[in-house]
Picture 1 (cartoon, rainbow, N blue to C red):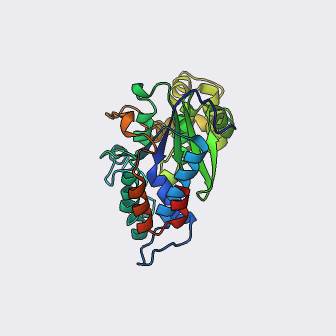
Picture 2: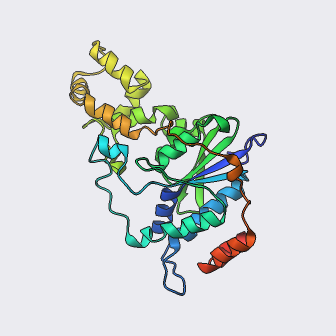
Picture 3: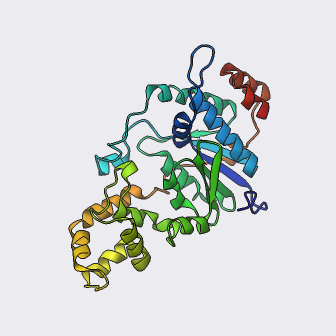
Length: 296
């Protein structure tokens, strides 16, 4: 795929910051300053950002973060993400460091209590004042593939922080064997998502979930047809689906990224390269990022 794409449109990169930091922390070996501060996640984050900037030459950049508090999804389903290990202190201590550098780079940081970075990103790509701007979502989380559309692509880190794949609508359809990006929450409503502890329908695997959503289009239509006596679904599967209808719709709701948060973006505050070079040099030197400093 041509990464430069259609250049008559201006470009915005939106960073899924938590996902990038997690990916970098676990992908890179420990990297410490002379003072003994661990900075491998910050270093990897900046490498991924610089790669995306080089590949897409954006006019604008924004960073989104999860807010460190329960979200509306936890209220809806208390077991949401309950099986995930707690963030290691060594990683958590790097969050303020990357925020410090982002502020120096004049990249706006957006985080909202009760919501995840995914919801911030989902809302940003739908903002009316961004119509006609191509958005590139930089992430290590495949959940965001559901946002791909005519003006939105997802740059998904593949291995570590140096390799990534650009997903447009066509490539998402290939990955999900014909499903549209917007049907991924329906698919997860049946299949679930173990990484987020989203249950789905017990006993329904990936192949069955793909078949059902491709056949019926959505979870709502599937259950409407099911209750009207559709004979395409065998009796044992019908029973699983009907017995777990509530769980299926809760799972879809948990998987669906919100796109209607009260967020406003002033693009004049998001311009890439509006930073002061001396301030950036000072911030990067503080953490001994000589290689990254050379790239800037």
